[in-house]
Length: 442
Image 1: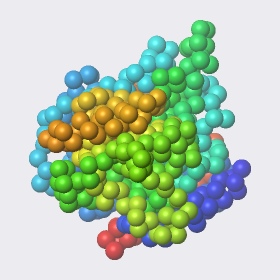
Image 2: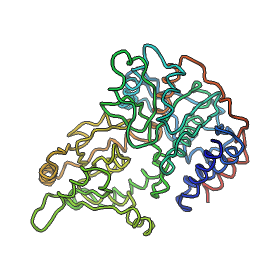
Image 3: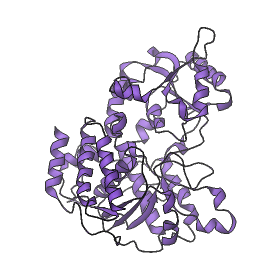
């Protein structure tokens, strides 16, 4: 088992492109260090975030800490100790705004365990469906790899959790949870009706749906997606701001734009029927994306920050929810969302006609045509700024913190160091973090 875990992590690192930007290089170095520990452990990888990090490195990864209050009982005013290595001392003034509205979904996601809590048996009962098990004890993170994960979703998810622990050192309780890294949620409501309703196993995942009970957690791409040359969210947002300013909305191509892989869903295949032809103009420009060819071209035509050139952008789900949603919503073009069946941690708070224009999946072409014609006749109506304003990394980390904090309060047992672990990987390795900072500055 230990060899299998180690070899999987080796494959992850070998598969990654060699040149993916500073934050990605940091992640690669970080998990290369994890390999050292992985080769000497049987089942678990043990990680602890170092407190000896200089402030310049912190600014590269972590948001400023501001004091805000919550309208729904969630305390967003978590502050770091004065001498914390992750306390930011920049010119950003403290704000007193409320938590984003989407924080309210934390309580809904955890509601199945509100009365009886979460037992160790519940957690372990779902191991066969999870990709990894994560245990946090006294600020150390222990990761057990359970199944093969597509690309590096697991690696960057763990990296994000480590950053969270550095941002709020000593603030989170000890934790024990399973994490699913696939496309679709796996805890079906239909499996836990009647007498089984009190035995729902908790599973963290990137998305949920009305028919599932997965606990929704921010996806890996907030910390980068090296396989597709996508930068971490903080860096990407800055690039996108510049991209949005290159062409004013009124001067953009007056069509709805979509580019992606249509082979993963019938709805996406149907979207191609709405593409403009010499016989019919539905107001849509639909492009198929061949990832193999794109890789050979070194992603030169897939820079998301350069794709805000049309007045409208279409979002349509793939096998389930798609990471592309936040990138589409981030453009200040009008977002056209084809009937969604899945949601991530923030999209449940999006409102039609305010944050996006709804597109009927059963009549896509006419629905897109109507939206485009209406928008072109009312050119003062541009896209929503919800993502730019509400989905910054500070809010992402705060959401993670409050979700995990509330989850930890539900545990009916005290998590302990896994019995298989026999060596610490990082400890307080200041020299390691110095090397990381040097890589970031290159």
